[in-house]
Length: 504
Image (tube, rainbow, N blue to C red; front, top):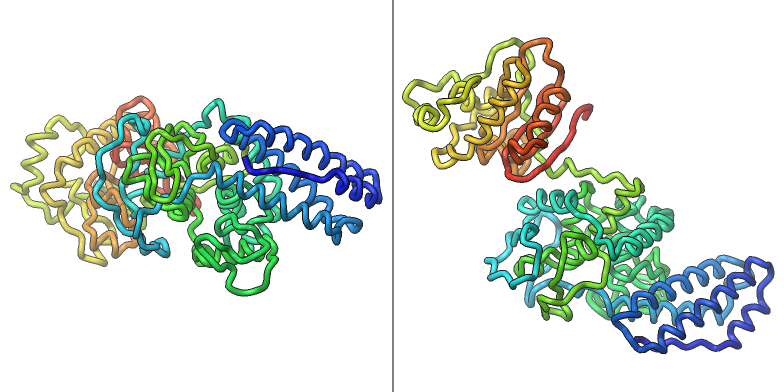
């Protein structure tokens, strides 16, 4: 436990400076909190008492912050010394329980989102190190990880033993949102993202650099060192935080959807947990997604160590549960750009498909029981292909991928009762790029389709999506459902994803 000491004469001096009952009350609270900190420090048990000590020091810093905003204490040397000392103690306590950086030795800084590359080959899983159904993908590519972030977030609960602490941390973030907004708004960064970094890097210590938790009285000494480059210490939190966010290029980003934010949080700490098949505690600590496994020092991993720090994903989950923030998750999904054929009442078919096509033979052998569709409907190349002319038939190695999708659509058609026309099914990578499709579009895997009901009297896209949602809820399939103004996207990716783009 870091050493804590205080001089009673300092509190007597502060009490003499108080110019109101409110100021005197704050000094008394400081005294009470200092006595509690002394009691905890005397126990000499870091594991059991560091979290409680951190809470006490945080409250002391809060009282000091309040006092510095009053005329009588703004220039007090006693307050200045106490503020610096509490900031130092807070940083030491935070470092004792934090998740160490998870970058591997020699790993390059990936830079911007666009520069992220795939991870290395996955080694064997350490026995008992993760929940068996929450094994992360070993990659550092956003295209690979976007769905996982949303799936983990939607499935994450707060572990019961940590609920009070996580609720308190979420409340602290919300209470300081105006301060975070003053930093983030000029940079185009949401306040909750800054709050998440602040919690992870220094447990809301406003006397520490956002870069790494070093004290604001000097430039950073740990990586990244020598920050901020400009200005002179001591720095304000706002000056340091603005520099930290710009150093990472966050002020250049425009997509602040949930998966993008979680990707940036994980990149901030490093992707090293993925090669060990452990959900990063930097994201998922205190949640049901994470169980054990932690870097206990730089590049030193202990499969049985358990983080004592609330992960930023758990923090955002609590803020979302409390209605404090509304996280946009739909930007991870297939944002469709292949305009459907809005006119007429014809079924879309591949006019170039001829009898004897290899897919017709596949259909006859594997899907002959399908009631409402013909094989050539699934070869329709999309409305925009008339312009781009670069879509192709799906390769034969993908034929098996479409079978589950066909049966899902057949059941949807049966329950709706009206004829369904497919607007887009398979997309070649070139065609998908031409229409600005999502880089990880399921259409390229031949397990996704966009459909509309062409018979009148069968509702709108919301009604059609309700049928698909009911099927998924009943366990008929696991996949994505996207709702658009005039059509519905369905895919059989193997896990659930839902988005609503109506009105956009």
